[in-house]
Image (tube, rainbow, N blue to C red; front, side, top):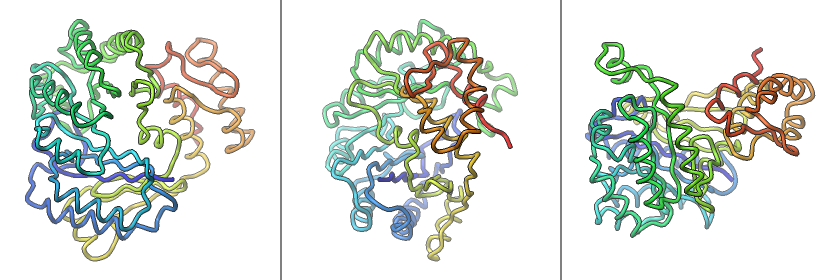
Length: 374
């Protein structure tokens, strides 16, 4: 089994915090879609078995119309085996989700919507330079529930001007809507973004870890009260609605990355397409791939194993660690984990070492402490 990730590199406007690859001009949309379709064909034999997940990310895939999607799905189903129960997700923005658009999407193979809400307050959305407003966010969710049962939304915490009270109110709105899956992301200052420049020029207050941590503690409490499971560091779900796409990433399942800047993984290599729409299209049109790849060393695989498993509720299998990476790295991991086990940030139960609720916000840092640096 494997996954297919398709990067749609277009947005209406640039969010201040975002450093993903996209263009705000749709001038070359048709050409890029043709190239994406051709790349799918060129790489059809790269991974074996069935596609268990298909994920349209971006960018803003909801800028595609019904004909665009029909074109891509026709190629996928002609050249790939797609599991009958495959999870097929499209990222969308609230301002794109009219009743007519939702009707169109519901008549495609897409069976899961990811809606980029980010906040239910206009002041936050304006600060982030989102294309929608709070009213549109709420309306899109009520409409989407008429057409899709499997919905996830994104919300951002740690926003400088968002105090704890407003964050609690945000969570109340989200949980009362009974959205089955929610991804919560701490605001980070990425390089070469408008947010980075605003902070440097003192046009925006800095992003502070302690502020984000306070929000995360509130999130943990209120999610538990609302019966959401924190099955992966950033992801919270009702029973039966874990994201299969997310779980595939964190369990090391291979996936194809299709489209400009898209990343993929085959178990031995990580590959990524060039992040330039026109150069990508020219390469593909010439029948060549636009990929760069790196072979993963034994140590790379060990570090990724630790990082990905620590992010999940299930945790890291110690027998799996020992079997895959040998006695040396197994003993090294246990020794490096000792300080966190003693502090209660990690725990061991049966075969699994996992991050406790106390240590959840420090997950990536603790994984880094177990990394082996050659």
